[in-house]
Amino acid sequence: MTIFGNRIFTVRLQLRRIELEDLPLLVEWSNDPQAYGRYLTPECHSTEQLGLQLQAGVLWNERNKTFLIELRDGEPIGTVHYWIRSEDPGSAVMAVKIARPEERGKGFGTEAQKYLILFLFNRLDIRQVEMYTDVNNGAQQRCLHKLGFELTQALAYADQQVQRHGYLYRLCRQRFANEPLYQHHYA
Image (tube, rainbow, N blue to C red):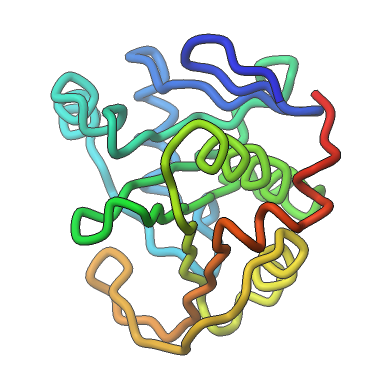
């Protein structure tokens, strides 16, 4: 993993801070059910909404960072972001979206999550990372197992005010430290 300013470089990807020129694409994705797939609910943002969030520092601050996921050639394929829980500053929650359906199933989501996890544990004082996933999202559940997460509970949760049933997965610092996947990485 290589970090330059607001970018994280992985083997095949770069995760970078969202800029003003990215807003039309993000608005397009936020209104496209195909960009969300079966397990996420479209956010339906407007350019004005996202512009205000960008200006106000909502998308990038000390407790919350949203990255655009790009192939190394600069082609955007999705987003990944984390936020630190206000009630538990040692816990981070992650969410990933590969918005281009043709890029799903190629391991890009796993790679983006792996390197964001490395960033969280190695650069921040994080005790654990959590992720929510829909009960029927078998691909994400397999990904989380590969990444060393453990299933902690089944629960109902709200996704853009849509009630869903899913699972909460957790990766604690000790398990992260002992997981070979995180000890041998190259980028």
